[in-house]
Length: 135
Image 1: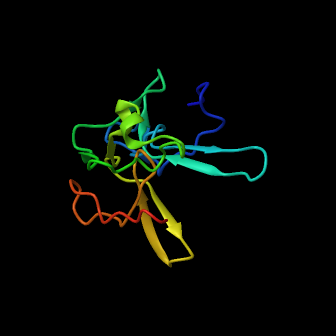
Image 2: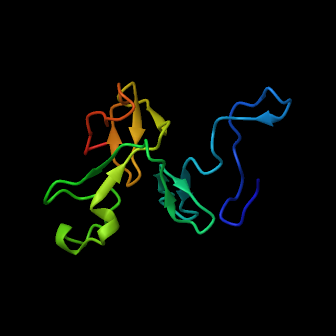
């Protein structure tokens, strides 16, 4: 479905359910990719569900955690100190099914958190993998 906050929609794998209705397991709000249109063309990936009000929405089963004292969210502004970060940047989380990115420079898949942290793909659904703060 095209909605105002999306330029386009990438659909997940589709199948017919028991009632003959076409459906797919991937939410249309699984992540948001924002790219700058002017150089240096940086892209940011927000791995989360978003509701119609454009607020982050995560299921009960999505792993969430409080950041350690002094730890900064990956998407925190460069000129802000951890003490001055807004309250919503003091936590991080992963989506229920995960948003993964292939990192060719390291030859491995990484999982992206809601606040842009890069993690090793998790072995258990309820626990985040090792964080790679320099990636």
